[in-house]
Length: 134
Image (cartoon, rainbow, N blue to C red; front, side, top):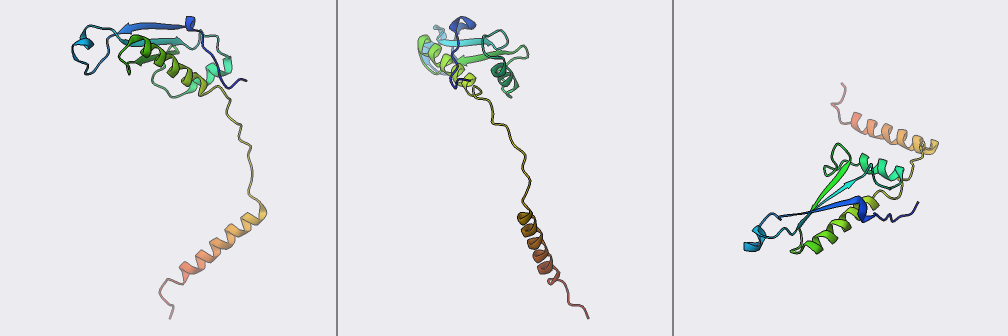
């Protein structure tokens, strides 16, 4: 599977909203923030990527499987739109490569012996700390 997945902009819904926070007189008049909505289940992403995306513990994903993102870092709508798409690409590509499966191993016989030897040494050291017997 490719390490970089592209997303078609037709699958993404953008809406312009007013940004929060300080910004002077301009912030109350101009809708420069972008609200991005991306339906993971209805997208053309591979099924394995969809499963990994929906399994992420991310509060930006609704119960219906829609990824909702608000971009308001920049002063212009165009830059916020580009920022939102970049953040969406980063989120999707974070799970593009499947996780490496873990292979179970067991400790070697020599490591078991070393562990038991150190346990017995520690036990004898602690036993000597007690009060002397009469």
